[in-house]
Structures are given as C-alpha cells and as structure tokens.
Image (tube, helix red, strand yellow):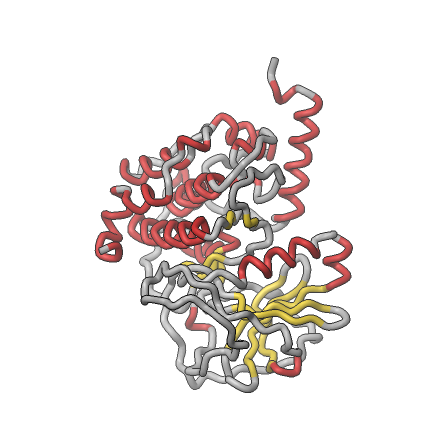
Length: 377
C-alpha cells in the first residue's frame, strides 16, 4: 500500500504544507527554468565597507515607508561608523584565548534599555511579527539592527514562549559566524531585540542576485556554517531552521547565522516538534519520528546543494511531491557540479540520521579543504 494514500499520513502532509505556507509565504525558486538552460555566474565581488562619513536618515519607528522594503544586498548601500562597543552590564564571562571557536558566554545582556536610548534609521526588512530598523545607540554611537515585535501578534500566534527561548539561546552564543543578540527590552505594545547589524543583508537575496555560487564560494560558506554549528553543538543547541533566509552577510561577506526562533537547547533528549521550512525538512520530521542535532546536518546538505545550483534538491511542482522526494532522498545533480561537491552533499543527505557525516568530517572533507585549507591551518 502506498503510505501517502493513508488518511492519517495525508493529514500529516497537509499539516506540513500549511506550515510551509505559513512560515514562508514569499519563498520562490527563480532558477528552475534557468538551471536546465544554463546561465552565467556573476563574478564574485567582495563586499566592501562604506565610507564611514555616510550619514544616516533618522525616522520615527511608527512611520510606514511608502515603498516596499527589502534587505540590503551589499554593504556598499549601508553606513559604517567607527564606534565604541555597545555598553553591556558587566558580569562574569569566560576568558577568550583568541580562537574564533572559543566557547565563552557573553556578558549578561542588558534589558533596561528603552526606545529613547536609540536613534532610529531606515527600515531594513519586515517579518511576520514586526519590522527591523537600522538604529544607533545614542551614548556609544554604536550601529545595531533593532527588531520591533508586536506583542498582540505574538500573543495571537501563541509564540511568546518561542521568543523567550530564542532570546535565552541567542544571547548566550558568541561566535564570529553567529549573529549577536546584545539585549532586549519591551514596552506596552512591543518587544525590542537589539541585534548585531549585518550590512551584507540576507543570503537569500544575495543568492537570487547571483543565481548560484561558484564552488569556491560555496566551500567557504560551508566551512563557516560547519564551524558555527560545531560551536552550537558544544552548547547543545540545535538550530532546526537553517536556510538562506535565516543567514545574513557581514561587511566582509561572511555568514552570520540568525533567527533562532526554532532553536532548542537539548543536551540529551530527542525532539518531536514539527518545525522548519518544507524544502529543508529532513525525512525524520516528515515521518513524524524523533529527531536530534543531526537535523542540522541534513539542512546544510540541502543548503550546499542550493548554493551550488540555485535551487533546493527536492523541489517539485507541488508540496506533496516535494515531501515524497525528501522521504525517498530523490534528487539529481546538474552537470556542472564537481564530484567532490557531489560527494559532500551525498554524505549529508542520508535518510538514516546516524549515517550522516559529522561536522568535523565536513570540515575535513576534500571539497572544503581544497578551498579552505589555509583557514584551517
């Protein structure tokens, strides 16, 4: 009997479809046709810092822009300033020996800020629960991204507990490839998250602009992802929603993992929560099985494929077909993908979670060391 004809599993499929439509109403795959006909890869240009004298137009966060808002695609469109570190309430923190993967907890993030402590600049983007603005802390002149979340909307969608968990997890992570959460505060109507500003904008927008990345660029991005997720694993944190939309780029074009809304701190337990994005869901979630940190390994396998080709591997004309492809691990590589790149993806996109290669093995894979050997030395 075809399991997809079973009424219970059809109900589960519909739940996944509704989740995907709810979480990702605007996700499209612009390269589906282009992938078969071929296209040129734009020459990769390094993201450059802007002139530090560029001024910032300030506005009231209540004002609504008259045109559509999108994330910046490059650092050249954003102001950069030399500024003092954002002030934090000093408590205890581990000593850092200089390693980019040094495990150390940040100073306790402040929660006694108010909106009056910030000058609000232009909008950077919109989300389901609010907006993100460029902002400057008045005392230190430090540039940040200020995320404004509507309390009524959070309560309506019953995700307040999820936000609390996101704050708790992200505020205790310190890694060069993880977006920093400096602190938070709230008033009668909103919750405000004070986030590190990533001038390069969303990875998703950058990928759409480039159509697909070169293998060298893909390997470097995968190296950064593996290092950051290895750090998360040392903290027993599972992200569970790795995708281009949740990755940002800093002024040097390096990845910043953001949006820890679906993340969980799980030292030993296996989880059963259905979460994430359809294109990136692992088979164990679709089949309603318990999952653990290996879901992030599956996700970076999907991410690697999408970087190399411009589309996720299991994409189909409808969501149910996508789910069938995922469960069967059914996908094909375009001809331009090298054997080394194919091997890495194949070793990550394995249905049995225990058989997926580890993050250490990702870092040691020939596809990564070919382009990132000097960085690992």
